[in-house]
Image 1 (tube, helix red, strand yellow):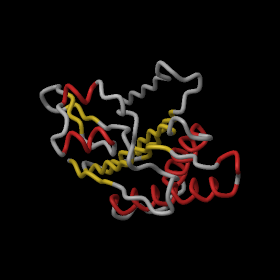
Image 2 (cartoon, rainbow, N blue to C red):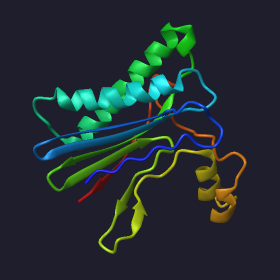
Image 3 (cartoon, rainbow, N blue to C red):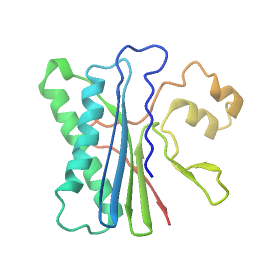
Length: 178
């Protein structure tokens, strides 16, 4: 069963989210990206990120180490977005978050950049967050400057500290699950 949900939010007229998945045999890839608000062509960046990842796996003849594969394709998406942003003034500064979940048999790798979250439904039917946000609010939580409750209403909760397309090199977090 696959469920995907995107919400335009309260302030925008354009949905900057893009989602996709691809499944063949014992391999599945699920991807979500959210364009960075306040930047040019954010919907272009999120679509490019998802399409790059999905197309890579559709055209892959052999899947090696799934952690290496997901990192490699997200790095590739970052490079594409970054290069396009530098070539076209209308696209300058575009960026997006990304979270991808690659499953092969019982092995699962979740990779993320930014604050698009991945959750699993555990054996007790409880949602458990897998990813950790790359955001100012998460940094404030981590260093004890604010509480969980304060984080919910923090005025800067929209500030992300990592994104695809904003730098030539991106750091990608990965999480392994069974």
